[in-house]
Length: 432
Image 1 (cartoon, rainbow, N blue to C red):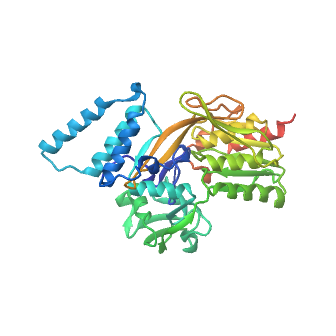
Image 2 (image 1 turned 45 degrees about the horizontal axis):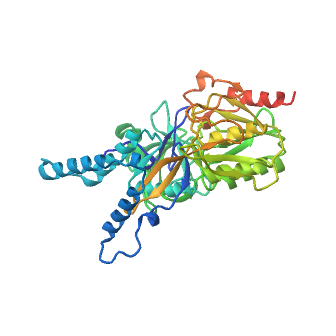
Image 3 (image 1 turned 180 degrees about the vertical axis):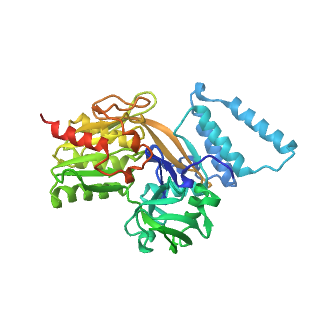
């Protein structure tokens, strides 16, 4: 089926080139879970079929809508068009493809830019990735500018790639004997991705020598947090967060604790550049770890009514100078993290204006295994207004140097990263 690029392609575009993970990468979203089917299934029903049972329940729920929200004309028109095609269409109907485009067309018509209908495989992959695990070989890659091959940016711990001996900087020049230069970069990426417990043979180019490596794909915990001591000042720790999923809080706490308690750092820079967001719970747990007391987020519905508020649970905090790096792809949970720290005067913000996504989506599992993500709430930071469609302007606006724009952040050194240097300088001046 031909369809738009989504999570099943294992591709996410970030600033400074294209970053690919062969573990699923989260889209720009801020997600909560909801159980849907129980509210749609009717108890009892006698001889009624399962399908009719669900349809009857939906009809009953539809009747409960206010008159202004009902649109029976739309359903009648759609049913008429479907009938004409089934009676007179000169070609075969691909049911799965037709349903996919019909539902995504409905979502597009509503203007829900963060909504999406998922096939069974895509929805299962999304749920698995949200939990912080996914099937793959465990590498982050992008396209090498000089050769066009797949360049490994980093190899995850406890991954098939690490066990196979793959290293940062390796170039994948062929996949199962097919040269990347011949089949194309994106088709080669699809060749690396695959099902659990299946093997792929990669031709690796390293230091001018080519050799083959067999890698078995499996379920791997996604590494979303990377950290190190700042090269220009060992008293400053740098923590880069790629996304927020269920395993991110533990990785984040390990990073901060290691830098402060084991490596002697006295200040922290949180790099949120390219962070597209993730789950609400993971973002709140991390903020609770950093902030001592107070409101973390307020959730409102489409009418502005407060649905829920989340406050800190742990009265402890991390009390060291902090800075946050942002760019135009810092979105959703990444923006809440950024704004909350500034609201509590915990951090100075450096970089460029953020994406501007202050809405939340619900994931709904449908009866046939497909799924739906749709916008259900807005979320407000602790003290400042919602920034949906607006973005967050940093305290100090610094554009990335032009010569670095075609590099991925994994490839930019501390010495040449002018935005990171500006964040460091802002830390030094924060309390002056």
